[in-house]
Image: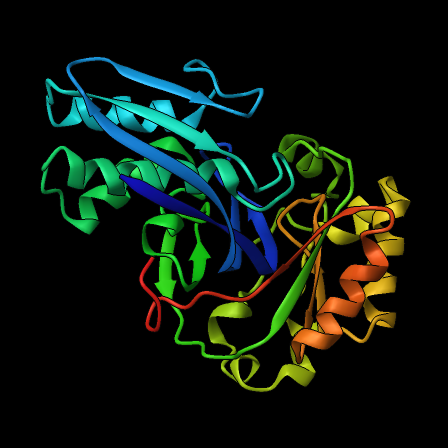
Length: 285
């Protein structure tokens, strides 16, 4: 079984405050994009095996193996599987590659092992693997609340071409949270993304309302990322943000030609990818 595991960007990300469970309350807008990893999953007698081209492709570290084991144990499946993972999504770049791999594994094995779990149950299992994993069960565009696992699909049909700029930096999410000044966020802010409707059709206001709270502190700690951010603006992106807690930045362009020109500029120094959005209501994920 051949499976594509798609990346995501965060069109916006706000940290609303601390939670009693030690996590942080957030609000984000997830968007699936065309950049993807490839999984090959084949049936095996009993054991789960995993191989791939990534340094973290070991059972102890990889969410693919953990997802397969979780489903096997939850459904008491006797059979196993052989999984091969080919990475294209940069690791630790705010694009959700590992979370996407885990969700794709759950969905694929639900079919391969004939476990017959509902989407609701798959979402519950995905939540045990990480806050971002449930989004990749549904894909498309969605508002994420809570830790990111409370999902509300968004009907968006805006067509554009995007460019990912991926510096050789690995920003640990825990470090990004520590950089935030929580004296400003200890009291829950009024949510904005969940009540906005105009942003879906009025791209002129995207840069005003779809903020990423991590950007000021991350750009201060890593000035190079702030420079890329400003250059995306100069390259005529109609919208530009950092994805998640970094380190990838992206620009959205009105046509393929502008995106291609921006990629040519940035690829002289950075790993870059051109992408398009993927929408749940128009494409099979």
